Image (cartoon, rainbow, N blue to C red; front, side, top):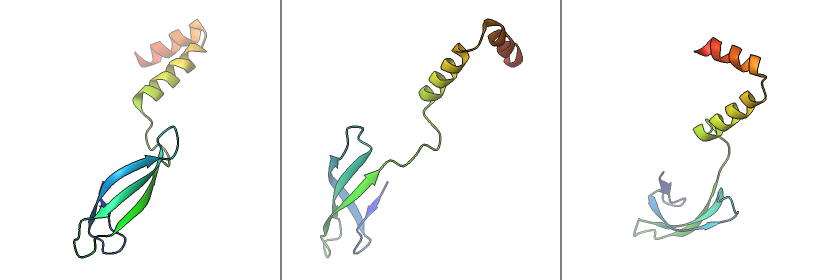
Length: 83
């Protein structure tokens, strides 16, 4: 991920991060422009929006939970279809 200075569009460096929630999904990023002629310092906000593909562990846990609600006969039928 590259941060660009909003003034001169040169590359900027993240100097520090201040998390704004316990989940660490929203943060203020304190940035410094690498262009000596600009030398701007600014804060950008970073925030998690949504999953495109959930983590594998979440998918496996969800599948196991759903399979656990099936009767033994339905589980056997499911295994027979996919094995």
